[in-house]
Amino acid sequence: MTSEEIIEKVKSDQGEDIQSAEVNLGDAVLFVAPGAVHKVLGYLKNDSDLNFDYLSHITGADYLNEERDPRFEVVYEFHSMDKNHSIRVRVGLEEEDPTVPTVSDLWRGALYPERELFDMFGFKVTGHPNLIRLIMPEEWGGHPLLKDYPLTIEDIAFSHNRELKQDLVKSKPPTR
Amino acid sequence: MSVTEQGLLEREKDSMTLNMGPQHPSTHGVFRIVLEMDGEVVDDAEPHIGFLHTGIEKTSEAKRYAHVIPMTDRLDYLSPPSNNLAFCLTAEKLLQTEIPERANYLRVIMCELARMASHLVWLATHALDIGAMTVFLYCWRERERILDLNEEISGVRMMTSYIRLGGVAKDATPGWLQGVRKFIDYLPAKIDEYERLLTNNPIWIDRTQGIGIMSREEAINWSMSGPVLRASGVDFDLRKQRPYSGYENFDFAVPLGKNGDIYDRYLVRVAEMRESRNIVEQALKKLPTGPYKVDDNKISLPNRNTLKSSMEALIHHFKLVSEGISVPKGETYVPVEGPRGEVGFYIISDGSNVPSRVKLRAPSFMAIPGMCAMMEGCFIADVVGIIGSIDIVMGEVDR
Image 1 (cartoon, rainbow over the protein chains, first blue to last red):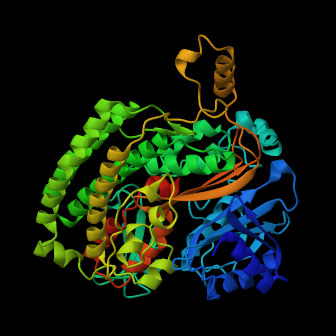
Image 2: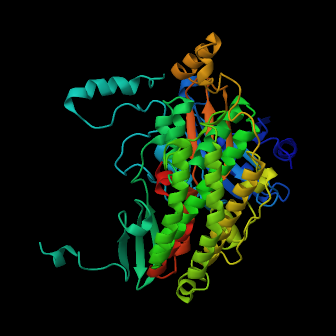
Image 3: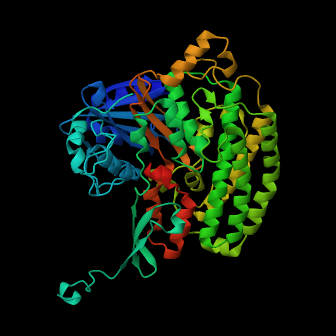
């Protein structure tokens, strides 16, 4: 199916659960609210015409610098092995409560990317069997891929740079 | 208080916890796995990753687009061109640039040479893990020739950064193309030699056949990709299913396995080396003449000799070097078929010269939980074979 046909089909079947849908640079993109994620993704996997059986990746995004609402986003990318088409699902998350349900019951390959979401962004993934840090050490503080996490200094307590560090954490990261 | 009083000697369960890595030589990098053993059988395998985390995704958010490319080399360090290509294709999709034909062919040649080099390293180390020392030394000998070719065209043996935004770094000289020609004439006899050493070798078959089996459904569900997925019988190769960089112009087969065990993964990878060789041969034959990068000075640097005569070229050169390329606002993802499977970058651009988010979809990272599921119920001696058959590269797992 082409991206346009996928969007048409999803709109007609799941119209009330998706926020919007578009074709962006040739890719089918769905916008879904966090509450409807599990239902819509389950439909994408189990519908016989769409059959998105392969999870390509899950990633997070922080739109702090663009000052848009909601601030966070989780992005899922799926392929269908037999039908050879793809879809991207974008889920906006509020800053106060960044929570998504796990999809590891549908695609077991989601276990690690979801742990990475928690590790790197601090998103809560409800229903995940083992939501602990993946790449950073267990005792690490903060979530490195957030835009208000400074890139330039390490989180080591030296007495001489304590104030400098606090200033940097509050300010936005330097851009070139 | 003695050790007995603390209860430290009392064991809760009748199993042994065995730590493997992070310095174990067969983990191909710094990968730690904690095995729960019942005698010689693995009950549970818990991977621990992150020892090689260098924060490349975070660092990319402070680098200009052109500066991200050398960092992508360090992700999958056994095949840098496929990472470069994935990054460049994604950024070029946002820029909506058409790449000249010759640049596409040179990209294909570099990627396929890298695939052969990567599979050679895989075969070398995988065979060494299982105990075949000779193959290790033979494969290294052939890979050296590919590194020599890399050095000649890009100046660097491993971290080539040869594929750039809008084309490639340098045009290929006739001498280099002749070198590639010589190499692909030389390789098939060598692959036959490896196959003579391994394919019908009873020890090799004993150690690989029927071990680490992953069915078609499991492989898809665990998000395995590349040769592992195809060894399980899934006909999915992004070069065929979603051609990029002109792969639709080449005639090549996608080798598939039946049983999804270690032996099938070996056969698939060896067959892929032969197919890569055929692709390079066709590319050399059909290599068109013309520019090797786009004729758009907002994306690629103007030619050196125009700088002395053209004011415009000088301005463009200055702007590109001091400011970089501004990529239109948007986000996109383009997957390519690397030696280990689907490599792709998800780039979010805020319209400036610095990407707002760069995410790597790494095939090794996605394969690790599936690999550990494969280990459950197998013997401890086979753990090494299973890790080798997945061909993980920790650089792209930990990023």
